Image (cartoon, rainbow, N blue to C red; front, top):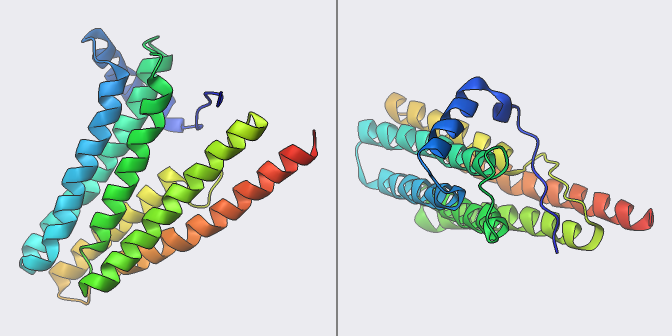
Amino acid sequence: MIPVTRRELATRHASWAKHLAGGLAAAGMPPNVVSIGSILFAGVAALAFAATPQVSSVHQAALLTLAAALIQLRLLCNLLDGMLAVEHGKQTATGVLYNDVPDRVADVVILIGAGMSIAPVMAGAALGGAAAIGALFTAYVRLLGAAVTGRQHFIGPMAKPHRMFVLTIASLAGAVQALAGAPRSAMAAGLVVIAAGSLVTTARRVSRIAGDLEER
């Protein structure tokens, strides 16, 4: 069985996060429902991204800003589900599935959606797909390491929080470019960084796993 470990997050100790998690716990919110909520935010973000090529520059900026906000809400769900499960004792037998499967779906939906905001469509789809594959592979290697060594390595440089940070910045930069009438290069650059960074992250995690195995 893959051990349940958690990524170290400073925001988990923030007072606002504790109050929000406490409020959800008091309301009886199951952590698995919060995990599924991350997919919903990811889906709306993807729709916002996909709509940008068909609208005016002002609306493009608005949609990209909305997508950036939805990415952060997706991450908020990822924070709160763990806090509800661990800090508030609401773990379930299927919690380990809900902890990872919605994350993988949300990653793919958001990154492919981001690619659809780039013209030409085929180039954008290729960039989004490459970033999504990279994100899936970093998670696969992390879980493989947990299965064979009992340890999960969350190291970057392009772990989930890092790639969502890059995508948020790319979205906001794209919004500024749209308002300024400048070429929309930020999103393409962001997806290239995510895809390349995912390769480096995968290599680093494989190296750590190999070291763990050799120490046995």
